[in-house]
Structure formats: C-alpha cells, structure tokens
Image (cartoon, rainbow, N blue to C red):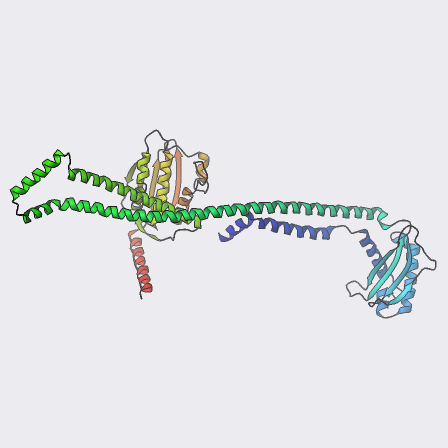
Length: 501
C-alpha cells in the first residue's frame, strides 16, 4: 500500500514528467547515434582507412607493420605504390582521386616516410582536403598517424547518388532530433507551469487545513467548557430532586423543634397551600415539571455535544491523515446502536423521523472496536435521516438485529427515495454520493473501511420501497468472550506493572 501510494503521488507530481522526459532524451540520443546514417566526412575517412590497411608490400607487411619495425625505406616504397595506385585506379574504389602528399608520422609527430607525385598539383576551384588517420591494426593501439592531402577529381564524394542519399537521411535525422527537442522543451515549460499551479494549490490547501485544524482545536475547547457546564447543571438538578425528596421530612423536623403539634403543623401546611393557591403558585408541581423539562433538555444537549465531539474527532483525524487506535473488545451490537441513536436524538426529533427497533436476538456479542461500530451506525442513521428529509410520507427508520449463522446481522431501512442504480456498485467509494456539493462521499467510504477492518460485510439494496443497509459481523461465542476478557485483564495487569513505581 505504501509503495502504491508513493507511485501514485510520484505520477501526480511534476517529477514524473521530468523523469520521463529525461529518459526519452537519453533514448532518442542513443537511438540517433546507433541508427543515424554516416556523414560524407565519415565515409571518406572509412575509405582512406580501408585503403591504408589493404595496402601491403611484397612480404605482406602494411604501413602499420613497417612503422612498428622501423623499416623506413620499405615504407617509402609502399607509399609510392599506394599513391600511384590511388591516382591511377581510384575510380575503381569510389571516384578518381588526386593526391598532393602522403606522410607517415611517428606518435611524436616526426615524419617517418613521405611521398609526393612527380607533377605538381595546384588548387583549381575545388579545395584540397587534409585528413589525418591513426595507423595501426584493428583493435590495437595506434603506432603513428598518416596524413593525406587529397581531392576528388571533378567531383566530390557527396555528388554520388548513394552518398547523397546518406547526407539527406542524416539531415532528416538531425531535423527529427531538433523537433523532438523542441517538443520536450515545450512539454517541460508547460509542466513547469503546472508545477507552479500545483504548488500554489497545495499551499492554499495547507492554509485551509491549518485553519480547519485550528477550528477543531477551538471547538474542542468549547465542547470541554460546554461539558463542564452541563455537569454543573446536572448537579443542580440533582439538588432540586433531593430538596423535594427531603422537604416533607425536613419541615416536620423543623416543626418538632419549634414545639408545634401535629394539628398545628397540618394547619400551617393548609395555610401555606391556601396562600400559594391565591397567588396561583404550586411550587412542587411547577418546579418539578420544569426540572423534568430541564433534565430532558440537558440530556439532549449532552447527546448533541457527544455527537459534535465525534464529528470533530473524525474531522481532525481526516486532516491529520491518521486513524483511530483500533481497540477491539467484546460488546453487544445493540448497545452500540443505542449509543448511536442517543447521539442522534436531536437529529431524529428535528427531522421528524421515527425510529423503530426489531430486536430478534439477545445473543449479539461481537468483537470489534466500540467507537468504530458506533461511528458506523451514526453515519448510516445520519444518511437515512438526510435521505428522508424531503419525504412527504411517513419518515421511519427501522433497525433490526438478528442472528444469521455465525454472524450478527444489523439492518437499517429507511423510506427515502431509491439510490440511483448506476451508483449502487460504487456507493462505498470515496467521492461517490447521491448529494450534490463538494466534500461529499466520505461517510459511507469510512463505513466500508471500518466494516472491512471488523472482518465484516456490508451491502445495500434500494428500490421504490426504500433503502436497506445490511451489516454482518462475525458472532463471538461465550468461550471467545471469556478468552478475550482474560486477555484484556492480562494486558491491563502488565500495563499497571509497567507503569507502577
């Protein structure tokens, strides 16, 4: 997975383009050097090289051998025969050739042997060529050089049809390389612009991520203060309940200390109630009812606070690109559903969605991460609520839990409109959503990833009767529950032993 991610990021980055262009440049250069036709100058050098190697004396010794054995006189005779042969019979090789001079030089540049024709040849319109070739057998280190001043009589080598064709091919190859180089340069410039745009986009995304993380931090601070105030309010409600519970006993004790008889105490109570009735007050009834309403509001605020905190944790985790520490434990699936339902209590109420439960089994133990399963149920239920938001018929979310073979099956069915058929196979992929807008298609993707990590399976069916998400998680037997509990206790004991002073 890490290698695939690296390759995917490498392909997206401009580095891949530059790497590809560099490889292409090397390949083009190597191919051009390997298959390009020779130039006229290279053909001329090859011809003279073959002539010098093929010219031998009566004993079969060539110029390189004579130079190696310091046979100067024999070398001069061989040069004389070589020059006359080229002048008189050069057209048999390629084209008639005139030679002004041939000299054999030692590696130090000293003239070893020299030949010039009997008649003097002057330049008459076509220039002479001066060519220096290494002297030595093929594959061996050169033992000197041969210098030839020559010209082709009445025509140069480039006028020959085959050589002219080689020159044309060579020029075409050079133009091809030039065009490829221009294309690569344009591609590099275009890619550089794309890299600049990508860098600007990444910088903007980083600023947005930093702002989002700061918002998560501030939300956490607010939620912490909100939770603290909720605890204080809950304590106040408990004091009010305790007051009404102990009030009759406390009043009777106070009356006894004042020396009031039971008859006087009853008369006093009637007088107080009469006075309160005249003022249209019933503290016990009014305050207790208000207290119950406040308790209900506090419970809703607490569940909403937990839901917001769960959402902030998910957002913060996505921004960091990290995941929850996976801590599986033995739990009942229905308990996780009840916690998710409590978190979404306000959403159910505000959307007018009725939640119906069908608990077909009490043996629904599974071994999963508790937070992850709650998060799965929250996402599925939230999507169901949003799907039925504009529904004009009855808005009902049905949760059914049952035992199917070796699995615990949880089914969530809503009466919302059907999911488009073309989206069903991809509904758990990131970025796929039935809702318009940016940033969609994340919740169900996280659901699919979490269920896969639980070794479970999730499927979806959708038609005109509604949409059903079917979740199956491996059932945990009592023996497995006991074994996992013992394992957790062992881990807990070792942790305590490690951290103890």
